[in-house]
Length: 199
Image (cartoon, rainbow, N blue to C red; front, side, top):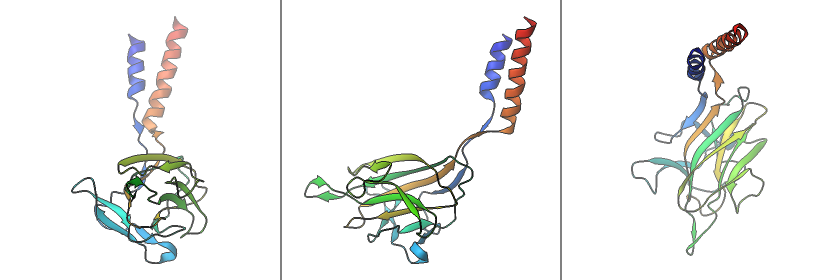
């Protein structure tokens, strides 16, 4: 009985959830974003083509080496770091789905040294995952490993502009045990060992 109680206590030990260090659902403005080399960017808030009442990010023109960058420098020191977002590519080429040109990555400057991590398949081959252009929303989550403070960067690379949509961008650090969980876990482990020795 005591072992069962200890097991329940250990499972209930509080853990701190991953720390969200940056997020934008694009329901307001683009004040958390800046253009390349501090220039004007081409990101615009738009209506979600599939979900009435939802606002998303798209671009009024194409660009390369990044178009819109998160304004704050995000810390790399609390990793691993998870980048998550939703993407919709709706480019249509005579009835066949074409490349919408959506790109997501991170940069150490504006732009400077940068790494594209996800992109539509026809645009770029050197990414970890390809974005799907099929007229439906898809959710993506990828662990990234910056080696210094960084910006998230997004662009629409392929003409015509405006057919790559982004929503719910989020950067989350790894979940770590809360101090109470560490203490409770240590006590529980010690108590189980003591019971076994007594037996």
